[in-house]
Structure formats: C-alpha cells, structure tokens
Image (cartoon, rainbow, N blue to C red):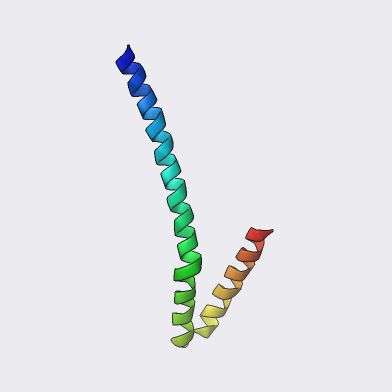
Length: 70
C-alpha cells in the first residue's frame, strides 16, 4: 500500500515539474525569438534587398509588442 501511495505521489510531483519545465522552456524560447532571432532575420532581409518583406514583419512585431504590454 505504501508503495502505491509513493508511486502516485512521485508521479504527481514529477508530472508538475515536467509541466513547469515546459512552461519555462517556452518562455525562454519566446524571449530568444524576440530578442535574437527576429532582429537577425529582419536585418538579413534588409541587407538582402527584401525591404518590402522586412517592413511588414517589423510592423507586425511592433504591434504585437505594444499589444502584449497593454
């Protein structure tokens, strides 16, 4: 009986830790995309001559940034 109880509690604790790890990982990924990858991609588009494609991306990112703060 004690083994079953221990197994259930073990599963609950590590299940919550796993969910928490996925949430933290998703948050870190979003920060990395906004601070590192998106500006690099936009700069590559601008330097590559695709300004007409980079401008809407910059506008959408700006609107999303303003909406996230509101």
